[in-house]
Length: 261
Image (cartoon, rainbow, N blue to C red):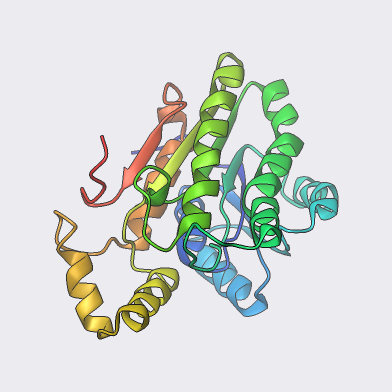
């Protein structure tokens, strides 16, 4: 299927590894020119290599999402080197595992800045161009914890739930102008981040890593962890011309795991 986005320009945040990298590669495979961002130089180099391996065009940007003052110059660099941004993939790394009670307000504030305010600010920077051109895709990657809270991930659960409400509200404001706004939500996808969380759980509960994996698989009707490429391909579809009437939604890529309706 031709997704109708060849030649479009995408900015994929936090794409030096994991789900961000997978989404960047899937877009590149469809002929999208992709700007990848992150703080790890080796990871960014690998993302560029993967994009070029599928015949794509990539621009790597060292980008610390916590620095809101850098947004305008970095977005301007993408526009100068690749063109106006048609597709924005909002994605961030996750905060440290924590319970809900007793967290330092400074940690809450920093996490809000890094995971929520940064994405809203970047969206506000690229949205006017999308509205003017009457075409745009804004896709925000969150977590299943936003609708079915995950134990010991209180900050992630809370702040990413805020992104659901923001996305839904924004979708109603720009739908008539050819801009769609959607959320993509992973279940247990086989990334380094998931391995880190499983290892942390094993240590916390005094069991082996393998026992945690077996326990996790029992919660997934599909009986396996997801492939990052499956997540990336879902994002590519939501970014496509074929998905022009899909907006304000939450798409789960979870193998049936999330129990909430």
